[in-house]
Image: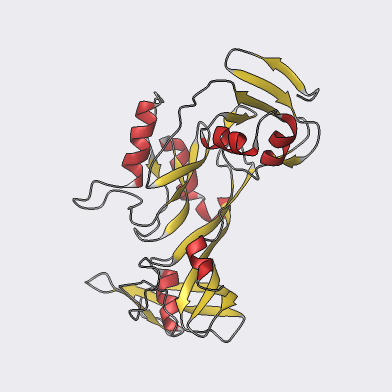
Length: 296
């Protein structure tokens, strides 16, 4: 152990950070444990930074921050095939959801992220409940934020566009996009069957703007990063179809091209100011390996 270990209790060993570094890198250097073991402790929610549980490997540590490392043989690991918790404190939870699960209850469907998280809060004896702030489509995977109390939910809902300063998605779309990037804009409006229609002129719907950047391409598919200027329902899926390159696996707006047997859309970047502390929070997940395999 390095000299910045200052206290070992029954449950946690405590450290003070003496140089800026990503969390995983710091732990490997300062803990007498293997990389695999340290990752397991992180995933098992056994690391606290300044009193908050952190699971993000590249969480940016600053000099003077305090780290607590669980000494328990087994941590109360949250395990779910539907989602993983990326970050949690007393006010918010950031999760990465898999495709195939709803963000919130809809109709008769009981399986959704809110119920999974409420069950986790109950089992971990936290006296609070999950409040939905935004949503991802059932078949879209990626990062989401949930509030743990009504006040935090209201702050996020009423100040969403000021609090969230970056949201980016990655998708595999059908066909080869020749341009390296561009901007798509139109008015989006739902019909009675809840299909979103796009119009180049005002059709009484909501104006939507999507920026895109090509990351990789083959003659059959293109890997695209999307940046939303507005956040309308099905915006990326509709705009992608607008330019003749629908998202692969999209049964609603697609063309039948479905190489991975899933909707190939993933919310990989989420950056916001913490609704209570004002701290900059930045989360990024890797591009799904299955997406990348199509471009090798």
